[in-house]
Image (cartoon, rainbow, N blue to C red):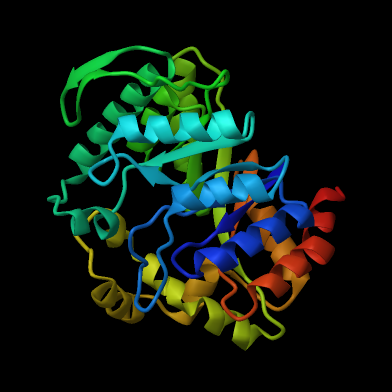
Length: 325
């Protein structure tokens, strides 16, 4: 089992996140993943640029894998630009990069003046983007006219190794796209929804005659010296909980935070997020994530009260126990 550290650009400024990434690598996390947002889910928040930040992380660390959780290719980013960015990262940091791809949210696309499409169009655009990225990584000169347009697009700088692509999926339809175009599946650890998503992914892989790839399950954790502080430090993340924020046209962080406050109780939030001052509870909750079928677990640190103390706790009392089996 591999453990990736999730860096939350929505919650922490990029300089502090860089320090977190270095500490996480030293603590024993095998990879560093970061969110890729233009806006946070609430205000006031943060919104560091993920691609710039990953270059700094690659330089400041060694050995650990680096990538996004996840990058959308919809309106904000053209897939040819995504391919160019990851080709560049892989040339600079060979055999260390991965690309997480998702269908995006209105929160990060609508500020660029784009109309937010219905879910079917989002899924089709993601599949088209993945196909274009694959063709560009393969060295093709691509002319294409669809949701995205290209005219003899070509990657003049290409790495020896193609970065693995992990496709974000929250439902079976997206899981089937992950099987067609991805090297693995990235999804949120949810006891109710995750088994169906993994099953759809594995069935689609079998139909395509390929072995399933990495299954990365993502969870969030908040630690502090006492439970109340752990909860208070992470409570802003209620703003990311409502399902409608991922499909419908919600793009005002202020309205989203207000809506989430009426929809998500503290009890529901603590079911979705690992919130505790007890390292033993963190160990058991991570093991629950693993039992859902993960081959890798991405643990996003949302410990607003003490993010660096949380990394120390995982270094000393969580990761060693998870690996001791």
